[in-house]
Image (cartoon, rainbow, N blue to C red; front, side, top):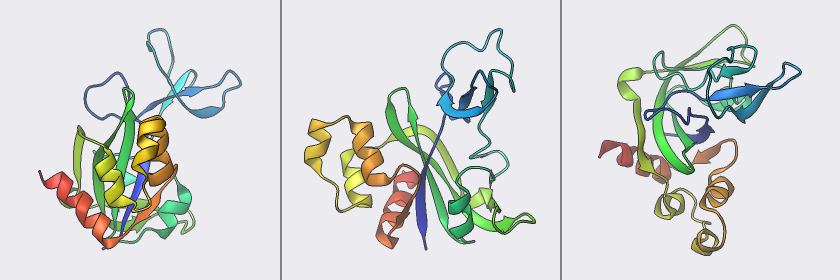
Length: 176
């Protein structure tokens, strides 16, 4: 059993997890900057776009983190964390059933939705959770730096491969 944890973006205006609304720059380029504020008088595809991943409705992870999608295998767990209203949360996980798509360098991960879970914002990431995932974690850093900086440092900015024990621990958090 292999687990990987990766960040994703969420819509800050919703009380349940919805994929992030991201800004499109003045020159038409998609950014990784969340779009904050009202969407009134804004046009999707011109002013903003909605992240495609993770798609809990269809159980797919198809665009973000191409390198991650290449290394993950059927039978692995992909855990998602997000920053929501100033705090980081574990929001769910996919149990990867298969990889699909015609390009092996750019696969689509397909989850078994019966073995996957979305819990929205019910599991805040605490120092205890970070320590269980990364034994090199420093409690002192939590006291002297912003918690989100510390979480990114110890859980990775893109993705982090988890030990067997860390994977089991995260799965147990979702069972409560």
